[in-house]
Every structure is written in structure tokens, then in C-alpha cells.
Image 1 (cartoon, rainbow, N blue to C red):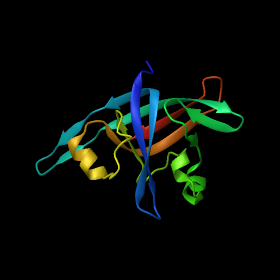
Image 2 (cartoon, one colour):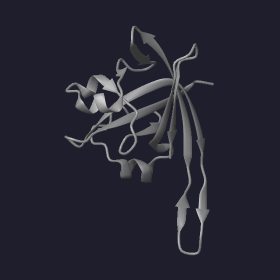
Image 3 (tube, rainbow, N blue to C red):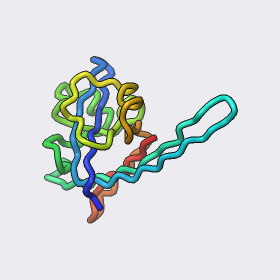
Image 4 (tube, one colour):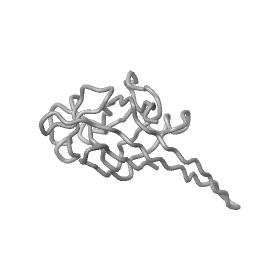
Length: 138
């Protein structure tokens, strides 16, 4: 448990760039499901990603990265996006494995060529003794 590695890609709306963040010691619980009908195939994959964090003052840090967590709206307004990570719905996604060295990020290429690619669909933040994020992906 908590032996997984994922790469998070945060999308900057203004520059249309992705900023990667590598997380280690995560729990990646993927459920792969495809449904078929007469005319189409529907991908029903979803994932629960559990990311433990520790706090330094009010800052939340995750194993595997030197970046700190920032809420989505603050991250989007920040000039130093590469120094932080966030979890926001829309264009942000995560991939099972270490893809932090990829420079020209394209979600469709990832999705078509790699298993374990999920758009962020929701976030829960548990700030108790077992501090962690639960990130839903689809």
C-alpha cells in the first residue's frame, strides 16, 4: 500500500502549458470498465488516487516533489506556477508512472497510448492525523 508513483499535470489556461509534479508513495486504485452498445464503445474507467501529505506550517507537501499545494484559483493567479501544484477539474490530469520529464504534453496522446490516465473529477482534503488528499479521476 502507498507504493505507487503518479505524475500530475496542471494546465495553465493563459499559456496553454502543462506543469508536471511527480508524486511517490501514493495509492492508485484504478477501476477499468468499458461498455458496449450497437453503435459505440464507452470508456467507464475511474480512479481513486490517495496522496499523503505533511504540513510545514500552513504549507502542504507531498513525497516525491519539492512543490507545495495551492488551491486552484490561487494557483491560476500565481506567477510561479512551476513551484506549486493543485488539483482542479477540467484540463488537469494524472498518469500512473513517472512522466515528469515530458515537455510537450498532449492529453489525447497520453490517453491513446498509455494506460492509467485520468482527468481530475473531484478532491477531498483530509486534514486529520492521517493527512491526505483523495483525488477522483475519470
